[in-house]
Length: 140
Image: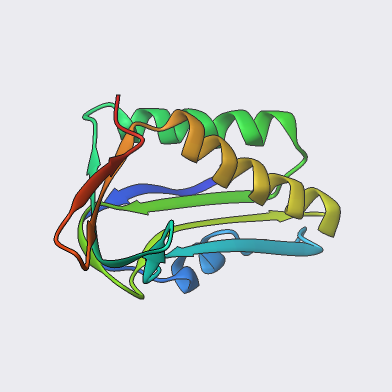
């Protein structure tokens, strides 16, 4: 079985449970996940919604991130799912999970997954604020 268990970009809601189930492995001594949620403020301004837009190559870039983490670390399984479309406060925006023989490796893999995803995967965020203003984050 491949260590890349779940790699997806979706325009429908999902939860951390799916990623955790995907990385389940009898050889894993540790499983770590991160769930990114839409928060109600940013930079002192009230946020009412976010819209995520993915470049057509975003899924390939996400897969490359997962493959690199799996190549660099002794993981049993990795999963990464990012949402696109319009999200409201409290919605799940991104989930990553990693299982590994030991907790330290699982923590390192999960941190690498989310950090590298944020840095390398072309997904951009438009924030809508409660004062009517909007802001693009991470756009080229």
